[in-house]
Length: 192
Image (cartoon, rainbow, N blue to C red; front, top):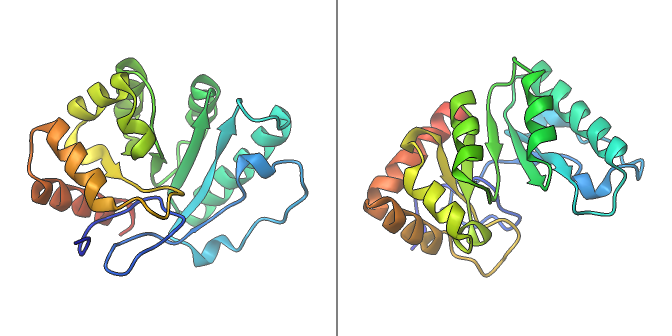
C-alpha cells in the first residue's frame, strides 16, 4: 500500500502518493531549442542540472541550468536536480544562487563527503533504486539528517515507492512509518 507516501521525483505519479508537479527541460535536451515550460504552474522546477556522461554540449547544459535557476529564484520555487559526473560544477553554480527556496538532488549517488557538502548547504538528497545499488550511497542514506531526505521512483513505472521506503528505513534503523512522517514534514517545508 502506497497511501500517504511522498515520491519527490517520479515520471509516473500514482494515486494516493504525494508527488509534486514539476516542469523543466532535461539536460539531455539542452541545445535543442526547446522552449521553457510555464513554471508558474509547477511545484518544483526541473529536473534540471548537468549530465557530463551524456553526449550533450556542456555549455548548452549550463546555460539551460542557469535559466531554470533564474526562474526558480524569481518564482520562489525549489529545484530538483539531475547531477551525473558533474557534482563540482553543479555546486559551484548553486553557490551563485543564494535565493533558491529549496534544492533536491534527485537519485543521489555519491560519497559521504559530497553528501556532507549538500547537507551543510541545506540541500535535500533523494534516494531511489540506483542509490540503493551503491555501497557508498547506502552509507550516505544511513547517515543522512532526517530533515534533508526524500525517496523517489524516478522513471521506473514498476518501482513501488513503498519498497524504496522500506529499504531506506531499514538502512536508517527506523520504521517505515517514521520515515513516511519525516518525508511528509520535509515536503511541507519544501513546498509550503
